[in-house]
Image (cartoon, rainbow, N blue to C red):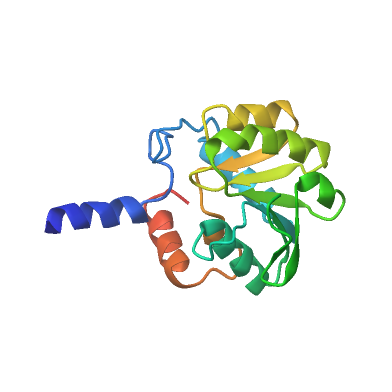
Length: 182
């Protein structure tokens, strides 16, 4: 049991993309080239106005965590979910088109089967930077984003990069840096 737990902690802390460029979901990330990924992340994090696609009525869902954390860190954040009218007392938007001109980037926290249509919606809304949070990526998502002119980050957690990085994410970032996966 000890070995199993130690192994799981190591996997959690080593970073979100393995050394062969696959995510924990087996998706081969074409952006694995570290320098390209660092550039995309750097460009993405210049944004100050984010849409979080996939906020939910369930406060434990990761889209909600990202929404609240980005907001608490001083970013302007808009929730996107066609089934909600508000999130934490703020207006919620049905899609990215409803935010055209209001956001610089989008963080996507939805099921992989809905990502490609969200990327098409991002292109229509002129959102050129999209972060596919772990669990949202699929084999075609980055390719689709590229074909639409969208710079896409996949296989990484935004909360390890959105300053100021705190708590567990700071620890995770520390270990990711130590193992060359940041």
